[in-house]
Amino acid sequence: MIFDFIAPDYLLKKLENIEKLTNALQSVGTDEIRAYITNALSISANLSAKVISESSHSVSAGGTYTPLNITGSGKIHEITITSAVNTFKIRVTVDGTVIWDKTYSDASALTDDSIFVSAFKDENNEYIYHLNDIPFKNSIKVEVINTNSSNAITLDKVFIKYEVS
Image (cartoon, rainbow, N blue to C red):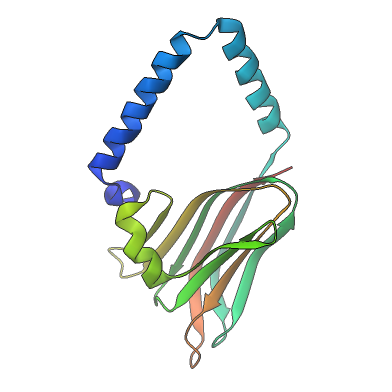
């Protein structure tokens, strides 16, 4: 279900990139590859995986809910917001700079063009808004903003998986 939005052409390009990487690795020595992998694993070992999982969170008319606001370096693996209505947006601030500030409708328009964002209505008529792979060096803040200035909304599910050192 989640992968239904990935264009076949995009997947073919990624597979071609994997083939190029494989060919390039064949020309590199085993010791260099081992050093690279050891370094990557030591970086990963310093990260601590965390999950935020909430349900039925109400956001007042025009209000903002901040499920994550932390300092440190790390990566968001995924943000998934589910609601019966689509009158909300997600704003992500990385290292003091807003890098994402889009409504559900804006994200929905990008769904066919990116594997990093998807926004769609599922078979239960729930609106799903999903972002993934967001690295940060110093801090990250995730806000869900109710774009309806007249009525409160309920976020049926809020799920964020991230690592921070």
